[in-house]
Length: 449
Ligand SMILES: [Zn+2]
Image (cartoon, rainbow, N blue to C red; front, side, top):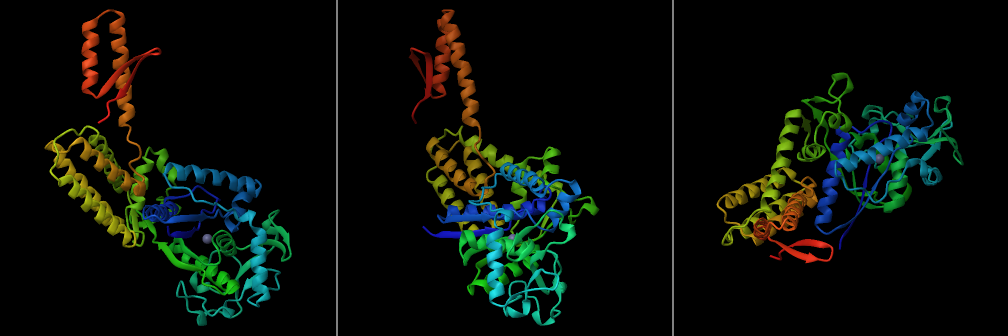
């Protein structure tokens, strides 16, 4: 069995995650589910950024300790991914639990002469000492301002220069600091992901994902820090998802088109429709979120669920090989498309072609019970990847009906109404239900097909 070690940049826990964040997390979920479907054993690590410029600012604004502030959003994040049916990662390392690993990595870079202490007491990565700097985001290193430094976590490409690995404590940090061999201060955001990914996945690992907006500076800096420290390739495959827009515009609080998952759920939207919508555009394409699109996503999910429900009722004659052919075709097309850099658009199109083809066989009553079971099996395999159909509650609904009929028959028998009792027995038999008298009363089970 092949193994895949995968790292995905997790949430910065200073607010509720928005749909742009979830586009990334859902693309990663789809990737992971597909690798699992193809029999890879995936080790997935997703960090939680609980110390950076934004979390400190947020906790100070609310006047609560940093950990109390971030714990709240960590909890919210786990609730959100559950609602979206995102498979959890194997490890969720928190940055604040890995300060010693970060310090060790920075010390290694200092020993190699790649990191240095500035006069402000912070420790910086010397970009000119790492000749591969810029290879991921294609930044032109010779245009960088020599010796200039940036200490914030986020900055634009034109401001690329030596960046902070360890930030010396300043009054703005308040009571957030660690006293280490590097001095009193806190780690920069980028070193967190280098230290945590290599701790859990090794110095070289297979896949690193994230939003394209994190390619620079975050992933560029992660690569520089890690490769400069180890002398080894950091990541074999980078996969970046493109931006999300809302109604054709950049999502922004100032445009009034900023949506967290929670906003959408409060308005009564189905989380699984949101899931379907956010993952149904190829990850390397810009995605435009619209409420019209959300309606269509809801209809698509309902269509799949109704289809699976309908399969339970199929009891026609054999399709003379048609069903088997449609299954083979759908499986090959879906699989081939997903193998092709997760071409979800084509994969979904082949799924809906399949649903349409089988529906017309069902209309003509030419799907047997055993063929319906094969179709159901395929739908389960598809749904292991898509995660949108879930357990369709046919069996449960049926159980409630049957229980009601069995009780009605018992009541008839007690009233010595043999005719009615017998009629119900015949009705149940027609549904494939066998009744059994036991010491505890009447039990029922389904006839074996
Ligand atoms: Zn990261």
